[in-house]
Each structure stands twice: as C-alpha cells, then as structure tokens.
Amino acid sequence: MTGTTPAAAARSLPADSAPLWRAPFAGHPVDATLTVPGSKSLTNRYLVLAALADGPSRLRAPLHSRDSALMIEALRQLGAIITEVPGDGAFGPDLAVTPISRDAPGARSGVDCGLAGTVMRFVPPVAALRRGVTMFDGDPHARKRPMGPVIDALTGLGVAVSAPGGGPATSLPFAVDGTGEVRGGHLVIDASASSQFVSALLLAGARFTEGLHLEHRSKERPGKPVPSLDHINMTVAVLRGAGVAVDDSRSDHWIVAPGPIRAFDVRIEQDLSNAGPFLAAALATRGTVRIPNWPAATTQVGDLWRSILTTMGATVTLTDGTLTVTGGPEIKGADFDETSELAPTVAALCALATGPSRLGGIAHLRGHETDRLAALVAEINRLGGDAEETADGLIIRPAPLHAGVVRSYADHRMATAGAILGLAVPGIEVEDIATTAKTMPDFPQLWESMLAQGAPADSTPAGSTPTDKDAGGTQH
Ligand SMILES: O=C(O)C1=C[C@@H](OP(=O)(O)O)[C@@H](O)[C@H](O)C1
Ligand SMILES: C=C(OP(=O)(O)O)C(=O)O
Image 1 (cartoon, rainbow, N blue to C red):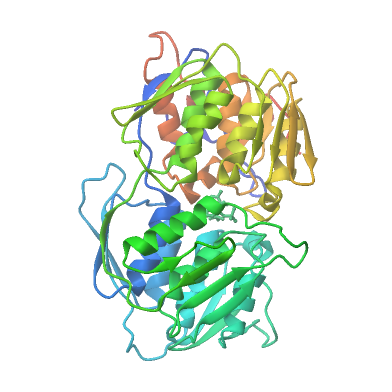
Image 2: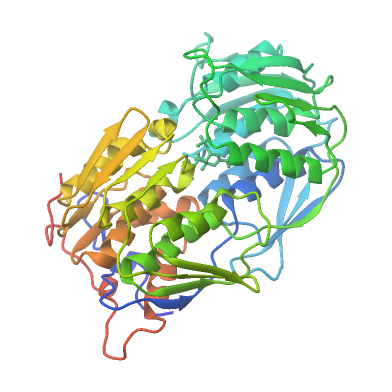
C-alpha cells in the first residue's frame, strides 16, 4: 500500500467546512487486483437474525464500518451479546452473537441509527419484541429519511410508537414501547419509498406470534412498485437459510410462517456494490481491475455490474471466481432501469461517457443518505457536466468536465462518485472523504493502493499531496 492516510491527505479547514481530499488523477490505465470488505446488507441482516435466533451464531468476514457498528451497538442495547473473535477475513475479526434473551426484564434503551437505513428500519421491529421502551434517533439527515411505513406497521400490529413529546411519530426520533410479544398477522404497507420497510418486517416476522402476511399497496398510485426488489429477495434468502418458511410466490405479498430462527455460522460475501467504484476505475482509465472471490451465485444487487459495465463498453469476464473488467476505448452512454444503490457510481461513469445516458426507476433515491438525484445533478453540473433530473431518475449528456470540488452531502456513494471522476479529470477534490466510513472505512487507502499497483515507475499518486481548499475549483 502506498500514499498517505486520508487524515494526512486532507488539510485541516475552518470548523464550518469539511476537509477536502484531492482525488488521485490516474494518468495511466489502472492494472490492479483487489478485494473489498464484507457486504453491508448481508452483515446487517445476519446481525438482526442472529439477535433473534434460537442459539449463538457466528458471522465470518463481516463488514466493519459505521453502519455495522451502529447495528451491533443497537442490538447490544436490546440485549444481544456481540463479541469480536479472531477470524481469517482480510478486513477485521469475525463476530460471535448470543441472541437477545426472551426472558430479559424490561429496560429503557436508546438506539443511535446514525444515517443507516438498515438500522433505522430493521431494529424497531426487534425492539417491539422485547419488553421496555427503546428511543430511536440518528444524524440530522436521518430525521428526514422516510420512516412512516415502519411506524404505521408497528402501530397496526398493536405496538405503541410515539414521538418524544408523546404524540404520534412519523419519522425519527421516536420511542417503541415493547411488551415482549407482537401479534403479527396480515398487514398492508406502502413500501414504494424503500424496500427496507418490507425487509424490516420480514426479518422479525417469524418471531411474531401469528407470523406475518405482508402486503405492499401504494397509496399514491395503484401498481407503484417496491424499489430495490433485489434487496427483498436477499432478505427472503437469508431467512430461508435460517430455516424460516417464506412464501413470496405472489407479487407484492410475503408470508412468513411463525417459528424459530435457526442459529447459523455464515461467511459474508464481499460488498459487490462497494466493488463498483473500483470496477468503474477500469472504464475511467481504460485499464483492468480484477476482483477475486466474486460469488458464483449471489443475492447482491452488485452482481449487476457484470451487465452494466459490459453495456458501457467494458470487457467483463468471470473466470475461476475472478471478475475481470477491462475498459474499452470509450465509455458508452446507456439507458438503465433500477440501478438502485449502484446509481451514483453509474452516474459518475455516465458523466465521463461519450454518449447520452438515462437512469430510470430511481425516484426513491431522493430519500437516501441525501437526495441523490439533486446531489448528482448539482455536482456533475458544477464540474461543467450536463445532468438533469427527471421524475424518476437522471439524464446525463456528454460534456467536458473541469477541475473542482465534489460535495459529498455525508453520502458515502457521492464521495466515491467524486473519486471516480477524479481518476479521469485532473484537479477534482472531494469534500469529506471520511464519510465513506459508512460502509468502507478504508476506501481512500484501498483507492490509492489500486492506483499504485501496476503504476509506471516514475508516477506519484496524485492523492498523496495535501490540498488547498481553493485550488482547482470553487467551493459553494
Ligand atoms: O436492505 C438493504 O440492505 C438496502 C436496501 C436498499 O434500500 P432502498 O430500497 O431504500 O433503496 C439499498 O438502496 C440500501 O443501500 C440497502
Ligand atoms: C441507500 C444506502 O444506504 P442505507 O442502508 O442507509 O439506506 C446506500 O448504502 O446506498
């Protein structure tokens, strides 16, 4: 590994500004082999299931990041015992989980959700299953993320949920007053703003007395779908793996049979969504990136990189478990539906493409870590690009980009999108690169080590130089 730490690379700025990170400009085709830390979505699902299981479980090679740390602490607050134990993962220890005791006396607890959708949506139904009051709150922007369907669902199941003043709650902060059991049964929710509303209820559903028959019905428009369906399929798969019977044969209906969640010992796949910026580097620099241990079969949405990057002009092969992506002579513009959490990375590539692109089916990204559609348009256009919001996504047309600052809005995927642009455009600085710690704390080091592999002998990683706030762009 070469280069400096993000702390060293980011010059201290006045208290009201986030530090800037000079994104390394590649200057040569990348030629790298790397793996990335464990999947956020799998780690946080397995943590929840382990906390509700019928015995001790083990997670091998889990993610260690802000979102997983928040999940661990939340479940500890509810009575799970979670300890780090030595493992063989390259990115930190394994986790041993002793589930929440059903007989634990009622207690008052507080859960910090940070900005983690998985914590704010998946943990309240777990809190409803124990005795005691649990307060939920998070980062300032977390209070703006949609929560209504989870709160309404719990209320509909007979669980008391209230705002801090005592009235009805519609978003964070709120308190869940658990009695030790949840009746369950048939429940209709509007999950058109996030698949996580469905996943949250399914994960706990087997522990409801009557199990759960969950139905999605949009209040706004009949037929408006649940987004990010891949993530629900992941939830169903992990539940079945833990011995829970789930019937998802009818669209927009999920039936979870009541019963125990079997304790497990599981190895977490690397995060294929977080592999995306590294694979994108192959296209942005016309180089090659190889990722070993790519799963042959997976429920992760990041497996879509194989088709997305091929469509954008790369050569993509999966041989003996290694995914190899080689960038073509140009990045092709393309038309994509439903890129889900991959969208910011795809958008960065579209901004470097030679033809126009359209990303559809991602209106719900307005409720993610930030309003990602507005943020991507603002940041791409401030660098001279040509991006526009549509009702359900983005249109991005080719335009030459220039040096400047990419703001991250506390959004890890905005920060990594800025890093991708910086590979191809000299003088890009990314505000608050440390926000990548949400799902990938080592991102700056991994990025610089990717560039150092196969670099010509005389090249210096551009990201290793402390940056001046006003250099190369305008801060708004
Ligand atoms: O369940 C999960 O692990 C996730 C579901 C998706 O949420 P949305 O359905 O809100 O997009 C995804 O975007 C998020 O990053 C992770
Ligand atoms: C939308 C995301 O996160 P969260 O789990 O906080 O919703 C994401 O990681 O892209």
